[in-house]
Length: 334
Image 1 (cartoon, rainbow, N blue to C red):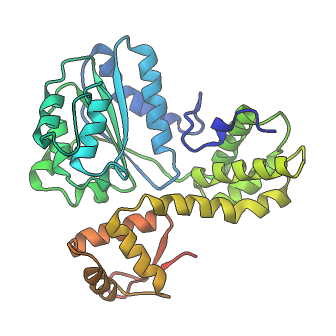
Image 2: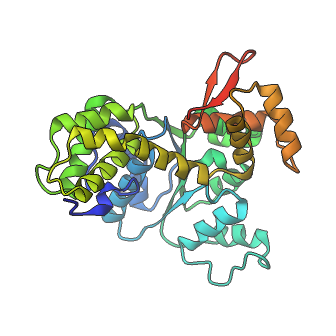
């Protein structure tokens, strides 16, 4: 039943993209100077989870690689590589400059100096989950490197810009911006149809079943692809030659739980503490939450940073915020 399991993974970069023509064309035009070996201003892609930001950025960069004779590219997930050292290490790795770098003994300034000295082809860098960077000043340093073109990805503009200092805000305020809205039902069906066409045997799933998956996904392509993958595996295990609605219904909770567990595993230590406190409570108000958080960590972040962390947990459907600012409470979704 499954002919290419890679296609059913969230990380798969498709050969063509559905229902993002405006975003694709705009980002392509922004990056056009790179084909003439000229860098461009940073570009921020923002919008809800599962709206195609990462997929589209990687798709465009792959297209760019095919049209430029010499081009270096690198993708960095700042949720995983959120420290200054880890991010710079990944950027140097993209140009083959990590051969003598050691985490314990290499001076931190050496990494940035080496990146500043880069004199190769244009270098296009995708910084995903960029609002998770521990040291936002790194963006200022990267912005000043002539041959570096930055594509920044976040859920909301304010998650990135609000914590920045005046100097960095002024630098990035004029960056290009592309907003990604949530996928609609028809758009998700089209995405799923392509994934089925590329990764499954012909005619194993009908349009009605694709529609059922889209209904369960609530605009999130990650969830939709996860449900399709789980349904295909279960159908194969059951010896079925088609993916039917009853199989889809059986795997919805499991697929969503898998995404939730994967997201939780990537949380920063402080975010994990906040999530744990909320999980232990039926519901909790911000003052109580922050008080408990302060007692559980050695170096508590500011209330503003904690609010940003909570917004991140909410964006990724790990928690629910009820009420307005003064009467807000937090609870987990499960």
